Every structure is written in C-alpha cells, then in structure tokens.
Length: 155
Image (tube, rainbow, N blue to C red; front, side, top):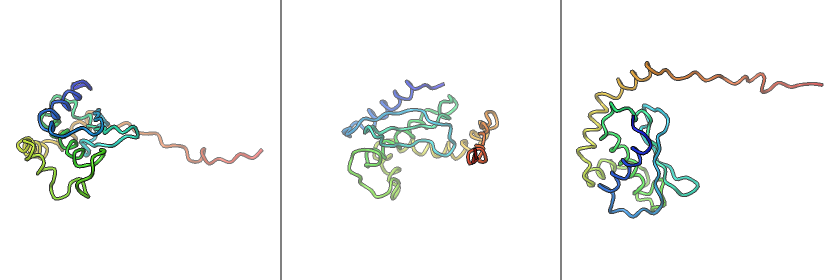
C-alpha cells in the first residue's frame, strides 16, 4: 500500500521534474482523501493560505499504475499554476478552458503520461471501481430521527 510519505515524495518528484520553472507563491500540501471513483483529485486553498491537493484513496492500491497518480498530481498542479486554488493570478476564467490541461501536459513533457492515463482509465477504471465496491460495500449511514429532533415537550 502507498502511504502518506510515498504521496508526498510523488508530489516532490512531479514538481521537480515538470514544474521547477514555477515559483511557489504559497505552500502546497498533499493528502489522501476519501475513496472516490469519480473525483480522482482536487485542489483547494485553505484559510491558512496553503494549496492542498487531495487524491482519492483508491490510488493507494498497488494495482493502479504509478503514472496515473503522477498524472493526477500534475493535473492539480496545472490548476495551481493557472491561479485556481492558489495565490497566483488567474490566467483563465474556467479551470479546463479550451483543453488547457492537455496543452499544458504536452508543454511540460507529460503528454505520453496523459495519453496512457486516459487509455488505462477508459479500459480499466469502471471495472476496478465496481470490483472494489463489491469487495468493500459502503457503510450504511443511520438516518437521523427527525421526529425526535423536532419533538416538542410540554411540561
């Protein structure tokens, strides 16, 4: 299993290889998030001024190729350098405007990784997520007792 230290090293590796020309205006942190089959990664700017990247915990599985995680991290870093969830001036109105992610991946030497990831995801991701859900069904959440919440007591 991949742990937090592995994820932080992956961020450093991607930054040093492909984003070293960018000045970090604010700190960047990375962490594992919830297990999600749809949202693979996200980036937010915290109240403390840290850009925090969150990666789906499904990527902890060694069966997922490393290049997919690197591509996801690079995707979120592209949002960072374009001013989304960072203190850098925003360069586009929308984060995926005009296929800018693909264009930036090509520009930064990640074009092959981008295409390999798209192909792998198209061929394998749905089956992987379905198999994972069958093996680990989501826990049922107990619904709050609305009647008890709104119970009026007369004394």
